[in-house]
Length: 134
Image (cartoon, rainbow, N blue to C red; front, side, top):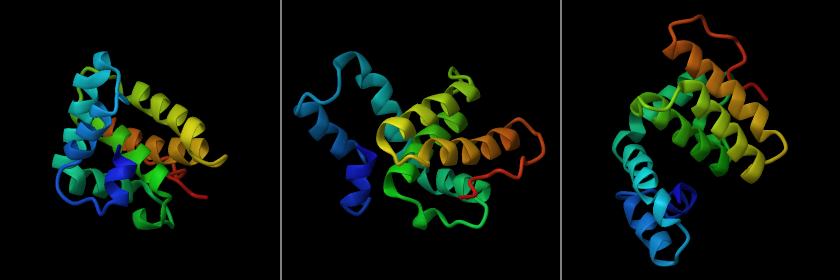
């Protein structure tokens, strides 16, 4: 959904794209409340989410990432920053799985490196130095 939203200019709320996916039966009803929550979080907090990702990138700019990797990172960081009932490391692992399923062969390692840097910052630790170098 976020890929479709960004491909269409990322204007307005990604909720409109979600509504289209729901109408097409592409979102299981049991997943809808959580999907709505994540989509709304990304729509509402994208500047903060993108800044958090950019701070974790080494020698790379957010706009140069593939749209898939960028939006996997947005989902994960939204969850890490704003969803208290999901452990940080679960968000990282789920994002790695999304990278495996939808990204390139490099995506899982790249996503892991960026999110590891975000995780360390959120946990108050020192940066690992692995923040998304390709």
